[in-house]
Every structure is written in C-alpha cells, then in structure tokens.
Amino acid sequence: MDGPDPRMIQLVMTLRGGGVTDFGVLAAIERTPRDLFVPGRFVDQAYDNRPLPIDCGQTISQPFIVAHMTQALELDDRCKVLEIGTGSGYQAAVLSRLSRRVYTVERYRTLSREAEARFEMLRLSNIVTRVGDGTVGWPEQAPFDRIIVTASAPGRPVEILAHLKDGGIAVAPVDRDGKQFLVRYERSGATFTEEDLMEVRFVPLIKGEARAL
Ligand code: SAH
Image (cartoon, rainbow, N blue to C red; front, side, top):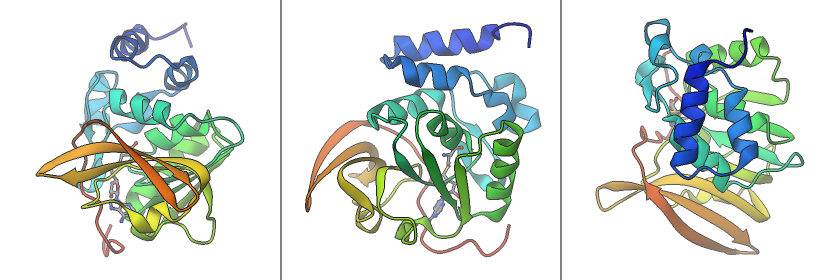
C-alpha cells in the first residue's frame, strides 16, 4: 500500500460530518477496503457514500448507514454479534473489527460464498457464515450480545429479537406507514425499549430460503 487512499479519507470525513463520532467505528471503516465488496463495474464508485447493486438483485448499504448502525450497537471486543443479511459481507467485515465474533446469515448461497471469499482474503477469521432463513435468527448460536438486521422487516422482528441477551442491543430497519425506520432495541429482561434512529431504505427481509442462486 502507498499510504491511505484519498477516496477513503474523503469518505471518513463525510461520515464524521454526518455525525459518526465513534473513532473505533471510523477506524474500522478505514481498515475495510469497500472496493473489494462491490462488483467490478462499480469499483470506481466504491468510496462514494451511496448504496450500490450487488449480485442476486441485492445492494451493499450506504457507508453512512453502515457506520450509524455500527455506532448504535456500542460494540466491544467481547461481543458475540448476529447479522441477518450478509449481502456483500461489508457490514460483517466492519463489525468483525470491533467484536469477538460475528455470525452472519444470508438466504442467497452465491452471496454468502462470495462474502466468505472476501473474509478469507482480508484474513477476517472471526466471521461465521451460514446460508438460510434469518427471520428465525440463529437458534444454535443464540443468545447474542448484539444483533443487526440489514433487510427491512414488516414489523418488529420478534423471532430475531428473542435471541438477544439481557442488556443487549439490536438495530433493525422496520416498515411503518409506507416508510422504513431504523430502530434501536435494548433488552431489559422481557422488556424491549425502542428508539427510532432515522428513516432508511433497505431491501426487504424475505421469509424462507432462496431456491436458486
Ligand atoms: N449487510 C449487507 C447488505 C445486505 S442487503 C452488506 O453489507 O452488503 C440485505 C441482504 O439480506 C440481501 O443480501 C438479502 O438477500 C438478505 N436477506 C433478505 N431476507 C433474508 C432472510 N430471511 N434471511 C437471510 N438473509 C436475508
């Protein structure tokens, strides 16, 4: 490497300007080359602060949203994290630098395989992938300290939230009034406190495993 990529410096400045103040999160973004996570034809836009298309008709989230969701999780290196919706693997890669282990579920086998290859290339050995339906969480590995859902659910994702530890934090986009809101949940016993963070636009969370791809 020939020093930091100026496009990366610009992106991190944009995120800071947008209210991402956690230095750990900014450092994790800075150490994660987004160009490795986007299709070849979009590499020149990899450091733009916008979502981009990936295989299987899905999208890699906007860096600003990745940073905000990560910041809202208040991670530390003891956290066992569940992600629903691996997609490109970019969000999982960022999370992996701030937590003990990341368990990530994706319904498209193609996307999961591609993400896994990227984790290997970046030597991110604390990410566990799985192909399947994330609407039911990951029962064999539950409970989790943190949960992040990166596809939008039609209502509070109760089955997934059931896998959150007491005192744990989750973030998820939820459909409401024809819009989507990023919601932060914090568990205290059987009670979940709920806070809207911002309006967002995610692909839908789809029940069941994908047949093809
Ligand atoms: N976190 C991703 C962005 C994911 S886009 C990234 O950093 O690139 C949302 C992803 O959720 C898509 O890949 C979609 O296939 C997946 N998805 C949708 N419903 C799902 C389900 N029920 N279980 C697992 N993955 C699901």
